[in-house]
Each structure stands twice: as structure tokens, then as C-alpha cells.
Length: 369
Image 1 (cartoon, rainbow, N blue to C red):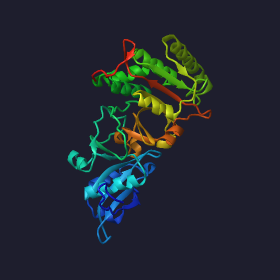
Image 2 (cartoon, rainbow, N blue to C red):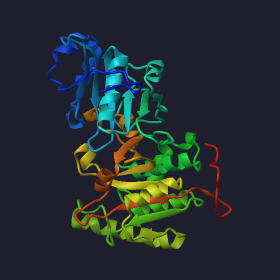
Image 3 (tube, helix red, strand yellow):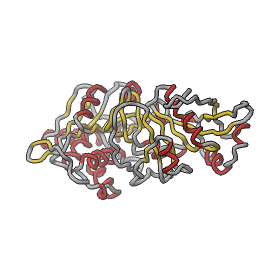
Image 4 (cartoon, one colour):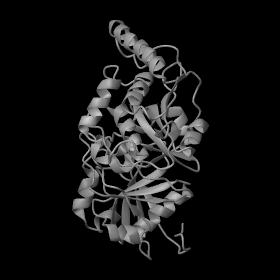
């Protein structure tokens, strides 16, 4: 493996297990760092150590703990110890060798100058972190592919059920329809209350709530299912009244002019929408990324070769997942295609939000925000 400038990088990759410690790691010291590595069960995110051996191969001169969500296109450095620049260069080369789009670096011990010297850009600090997920105050990213992706604010949902509202609020903040200081828990719960199907936000109800909140923003709901959705896990008596609410949402959509497209939304169409500077709220299952089949809303807002870039308002603290994972998260198109195909009848639900309009014409410049 090699650095961008062609300097050879010798490295080895070994699995990381919280109950054991490779011999080379202990000699690097920084026991408080390695204790953090073992504080949670990271096994679901393929933890491994990328280490740089000494010239004689007998010891390690540097090491980094690296993890990532399954079926994504990035690696995350939790920490690096020893010769930190060498460790980070080895991780970058390791990621390039896998054809990944991105390397992230949690800012537990890494400072801005160290990260910048390694080619990383500091991420905007989160406005809020999701419930129970206490990640680092800082984080860094280095893109390994062509294309620029603008960075929206990161806001973690404050409940287990407000993901749909948060994705819409973040989209509208990036579009300039909402001031950043207005993106808070009050806005989160207010929009959820208007969109909820108790407790989930189904696609039509979410689209209607977005249009009500921002009448100048064009909204289209995409749902290729002709039945109420997200109800299968409820007993029949609970399904009945929630189904009535979903029918009411369809009536509301027709009355206020929110189209409901019954065709299957392709990932190519999602890319096209992003190219038009639109935002796509996409309903996914967390089974592939987190290991449990729970419906969840994410925001698609960027595209790079081979992957779409999403904002996930939730981080799985139990697996060592933080806002650094969830923010500017690249997911390969085939993986996202599978994640967003739900239930036995394999439906897809999404809400597309266009750029805010002024006087009936889409604006060229977003409002200040």
C-alpha cells in the first residue's frame, strides 16, 4: 500500500476483540485510549486494527482502531496511537485498497492540526446527538473519490420515533427554508406530531406535514404500495385505526396538492433528484446497517461515484456508533437499494422535497440560514 505521494506504507491488519489485546498494541501505551476501545461491543461493525510494523517487523510503531457500519463505503478511525501520521496513512491506504469513498476520524484524541496535516477536513459539530449516543465533540473526514458533497448540519433525533421529522428538518435547513437556530427539539416534536401515524411517520403523512410546514417547498410522495404500511407488527385491532389515519393522510394529500407517485422510485431517480439539488427522505430498514429490522428514515442529499450520501439521525451507541458514523455517510447504491426495499411485498417509501419557490418560481439562491 502507498500514500498519495507514492511513499510506501507497510502495514498489517488484524481483527480487534475487546477481551484480548494484540501484543504489539500494549507496547504503544495509551491505556486510556485502548480502554475506550473495549468499553462497548463493537463486533457488529467489523473492528480491526491497522498497524505499522517496525523495520525489523518485531514491534508496532503505530496502530489505529478502525470500524464501519456494514454495507457502507467508509472506514472510521476511532483513535490512532504511536506514530499517528503513519497509522492514519496506513488506514487511508487500506481504505483505498477496498475502493471506499471515505475515511472518517473521531476526535477523541485527534486535534484539528493533526487531522488537517493528514488531509482531513473538520466536520461541523453536531447540533444535537441522538438519545444515548455520546460521541466525540469533534470529527474529521477525508474523501477518497471525485465529487463534492455539501455538508448539512447534523442533528440527532431526541426520541426513538422522530427520525422522519428530523430528516425533513435537516433537509429544509440545508435548503435555506429553515434557520439553523430553529432546528431544535421543539421543531422536531412539532413536525413529528403533525406527521405521525403513532408512533411511526408513514410516507404520505410525512409528505403532507412537510408541505403544511413549508407551503413554498414542492413535495412529492413516492409509495409503490396500495395498502397502509408500517403496520404489520401491530395486532389487528391496532392496525385498523392506524390504517384509517393513513387513508386520511391520502385525502389530505389530494386536498393540498401533494402528489403520491405509485411507481417504484429507483436509485437512479434518487441520484437525479440530488443532481437537481432536491432532498430525498428515504424509508429504510436498519437490518443491514445495524442488525435489526426496524423501519427508519434517512436523508439522501449527496452522491459520489458508486454511493449515495445520507444523513442518519440515529447512532447505535451500544455498538460504538456515533454521530461521526451517521453524518455524511456514503452507502453503495446496491446496498441502499436493498435497505430501502421493505416488507414482504418489497415496497419503497420516500418523500422528495424540491427547492423552495418564490412567487411560483424555484429560487436560484437559498435563503440565509
